[in-house]
Length: 191
Image (tube, rainbow, N blue to C red):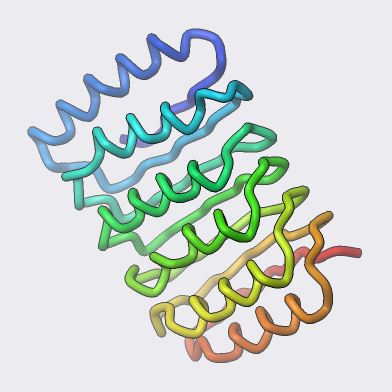
């Protein structure tokens, strides 16, 4: 599976098509990359995320996971659902979660980062711009970063227009220095 886009229009048809692809993928056991792009702004996005993750629950061959959900209504419950997908995919080496402009808080971020230390990550990209994330979430993220794979070579994060202060930024920077193989670092913080 390469890419699934879930716009508000025809969402029911897209989910039915996605369900069929999952059935095919399970029989072939060949999926290595998943990319979800949500344009939906309805309150039902959490239930749709749950349905997708439930469908993927026994697909463990995924090595590349990408979620883009700009300005959607993904909340902390949605982050817990995404965390479940990460837990079900123990071979993810490339992980990109961009959920700027959503309604997540530090609790949602804590759900997401709790699974990162258990993945053999080589490339991690996180985007939380224009959310309610604070230093508390950054400290939780920094604790996970200290435990992620020593093979991680690239880290990118965007927390522009959040409530993160210098304290949260310093926690992240200190944690990043503990990744010995890091070759590329991109940070976008509050100006």
